[in-house]
Length: 248
Image 1: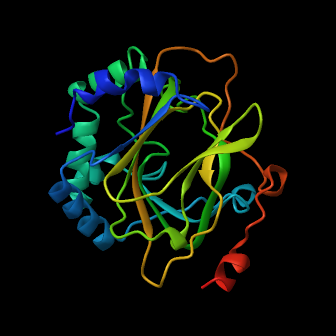
Image 2: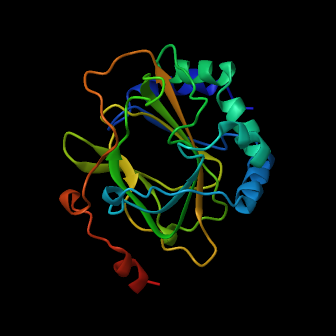
């Protein structure tokens, strides 16, 4: 389903990208398949959110499935179309595509989808700039690569929610990516600050949906860490939710 020739065409662009290796690919999967996925997710009613107090400042109105306590065997039963997409994106052919594109070797999928899976963010929600956890808590494999696919049809710029990629050396925002339908973003996670710190300003009933897949290797990182969040004010991010509402 993916145009596998893109790995050879885009690998130099990916591997030399600034502020860290990444690529944005539109029309990533068949449109009819993702439209069915969107319909399924909008009817899905089992969503979780992080209840740890220290996270509340950084992760607002973000919901996901599965969570750490979910029975992963329920995933294909509850969202079969979405599960089919995940199976494909974790297949040998797609992993080979990702390896050629990124230059990363011996990538593994995560059958438990810990931290990944389906994500939903509602009005006022945000995800502060952060660096991802780099060790799988179960397998202890090293997390190396993210694949995000956005599912938002007819998305408007004024709704905010752009993915931001930051330079860790200069602490400057370098890239903004609108979360439009069938847009994939692939990036290495090492020293890769990213997030969408500007709160969503969507009309009632409009939410930001995405699929998130993580890939791992057997390498051991120099230092192991959980997710590292950065305070908005420390990065000069001052546009708060009340400021956004004033413009509507």
